[in-house]
Image (cartoon, rainbow, N blue to C red; front, side, top):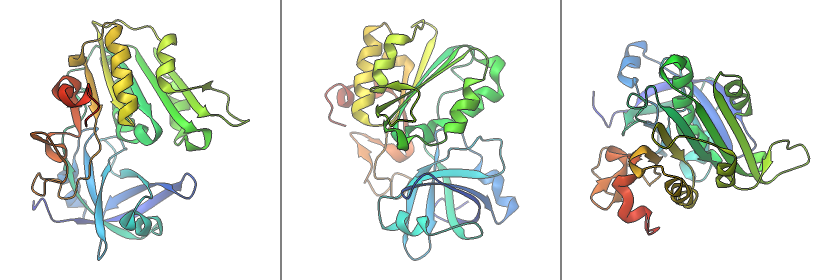
Length: 275
């Protein structure tokens, strides 16, 4: 497979969360190409619009599904064109790229999943993966924070996860509205309500880097090793194969060495806030 060659994929479902966030489920036009897109939760695809450009988007579906889901925030020229697409339209996909979440190494451990804003999208596939193999994992704690109540997407997923056995799900908003019934404040304040064993807990974090940096500091104070914390890093990934250099982070390329990193690998950047 040519890593720079996109495959046509048809949009079979579109769900909008306001004017600027859309989730697309796509199916490859050529069924024979689907095995080429087998992925691990945490990896990403390049979503291509002919004649316009392409963007790196995390895969937010479960690896066992035939369709591929991508949740996209409209922030630039290419994503504005994607926003105009609907069911039946065709986009290009190439991938998957990067490293996934270390879910095999997390078997029989407790999981603490901390996300903020749209950070839920890169980790939602990992959560579904865990719950489909529930007997292989210990207690699962999901903490998710949003700035405004209207920013919460996929609420139905959180409600489904809440019903899973041996699972804690907590949501919080900096700016709740009158309909908001969960916590108020930033996501790191939820740590005060969470108990965990630092020896048997593995952490998955995704969201604004300032949030992840502050969260890692609090968790470290509570005895969690940075070797047990994994973070998803966002950068301007244009080629996805480590050639263009736009996503370089010190000696690493986020597109091929990430986007999932063990936190200890990023210490010299993360502790100083120089990511």
